[in-house]
Image (cartoon, rainbow, N blue to C red; front, side, top):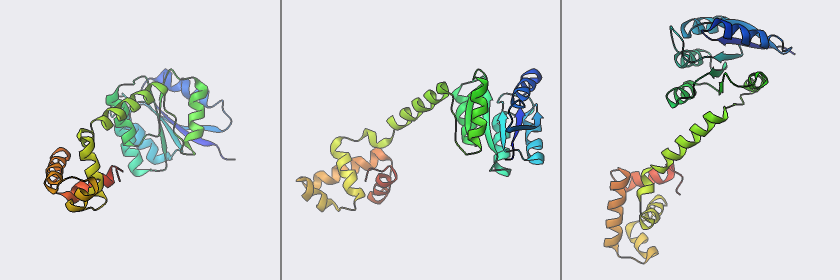
Length: 211
């Protein structure tokens, strides 16, 4: 069975050496490279093509986010695990959006880091619990501000019927309301969703899985 080829990127030499020394004690891991900056990480990754990279975030000469994005563009099969001391949202989401698979803190147990490397080659992510909490909070915050959440119950009901392709008259008949009332509701729906016509409102309904 071939070993997992790992590259370690960290601008603190003692931290980097310590990580590498521990990884080398694992029979199935092979540390094939070390880099001390985002810039050198890109250059080295393109040269040695590791299976997994442990990537620090805040470094001189190129951040971990920049390095992650550049490496993933050229080597999409390389899995990148962020290993950092920071859990700021300004770093978490850009790193994941850049293509990082997992996000761990340097306070993680050594065996957790090793396990994350083994999981990475199977494209299975590991997210530090504190980071996962921030991700969920952001998702809930985003969902809470979707435009359709500002619709009244009746307007949402009509939007769903628009998504089903119903005409104003068909909506009026189904809901037992007047055609003018339907038109007023449709106008309000378009305004709240920020769309120009009923066709785009129907597309919105499908895109947000309301239909």
